[in-house]
Image (spheres, helix red, strand yellow):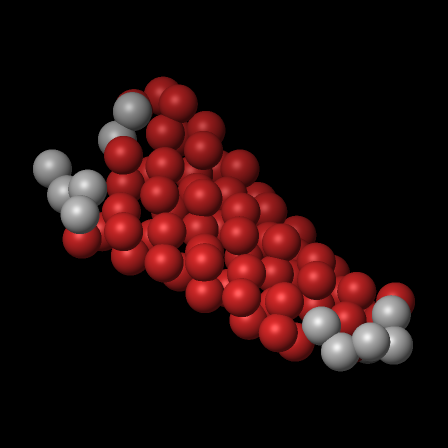
Length: 84
């Protein structure tokens, strides 16, 4: 049951990133770009989680945490320094 939930989380993050990027291409509102990049990073984070918990036996928690931190930092940059 856990692998299904992990994959559904990755798919949900990917769909959010796709929709945010599509909205950015239509409106050129920069906050959509930063949010899309954040969700793309969260998608990568969830895929690493699938690799960590299901496929590989190694501990990839440092990689997962690093990717999530970078994704959140991108969104924080967009919210704070790229305000219109």
